[in-house]
Image (cartoon, rainbow, N blue to C red):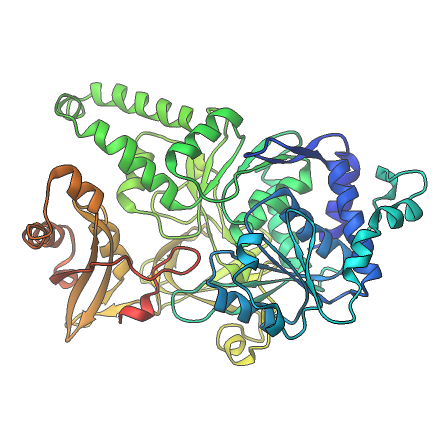
Length: 551
């Protein structure tokens, strides 16, 4: 990738000096690109006088705030390595990541900090509160606190005429340098530290710029965790690279709060995970189209199109009415929801990526989107191959290669060697097919694929997607036991309470669900049993089910 990541930001901050950069939705406080750049300069002076060197690691854990973004960008533009950690990690895992990443400084949110043990952080010299910018703790003999107290004087000495756009001059950090270690929140065991170079970040940013996903002066509602590669690349890095205005919601809100924020801000692009659209579909759309008169009207030609047009209009208005498209990614999309949105011509598209690619592998503008696909490979940036005798028709493991691929897993050579080969091909662990024009179709995970009694490959995610749409099913997991398929189901207690269904009545309803589900799947995919899970499934910080706990 010819474009240098650090120089992209240097140029953007100079050119967009007077434009709004970051706003906190809760406080309505806004900082301009000029104020943002000055805050970055203050942190650069802190790093310098605290003896943080190029290549040192800085850990960052907390909710999305303007200050969180400042710490991230200040770290990489200084030449240090940022280690963003999802605040949803439990304290034990977060502590392990801080130590494993060899972080020298820690920036933490107050609610996270109170559950961490600073004395057992091996290499961390000091911890700083993200939002209050106060020293939380420092090791004996350290002077980080004194340097922080003296930052105003240090800024005045470094910039006697005041900090201006001309002072934005970041070091020449080559694109092959390590810039970020992003710890995955995998469903199959403990997270691994994905090493992303400037090249991997630039590949995603440059694609976003050239695709005009964000443009100068546009608005963006950021509610996905920026510690996750998807939110990081397209709710933060790409907008900042072009002069867009980022409104930070803090965390994934309820559909009601999200819709309210969208209608107020009227974003130009919406980046979301499938769960957001699935909740809006189940809470807003299904109750509407299930009513007697409307359900009848939808069976009448021409009349159904009028109704679908009205639903599409309401849905577009719910997202602010000013966006080009909704990009869905980060997890498998429920097929029923996807088909409905496609039928009503809602402007959405589905992309494919993984943390190991920082994250993007494929994306298609919504007008060219192919139903049930995960978009086309990024032209000139990524390529893919399918480990199958017939890649267009017979699923095989998806392997990718290109600008966005990680350097490897930090301090984990064995895990790196298993997935990343010397010729640059990364084994994704996903199963799918690839059309002649580079469009990817995902079938499921290689590790979760089950084998039926007659030797057929079964992708449990496809069965679960159908099952999760059924009455009184909140979420499910399909496992294999003695050659038969069993579904573990966590009930939708809200729906049960609404309909007056008791727990004693639930097994009979699940038998009906099993019968209906078995009509929708292939003979070799049929369930033999549904087992009710009293408690919600154990989840990763990204809210994916920890499958390895239920095998």
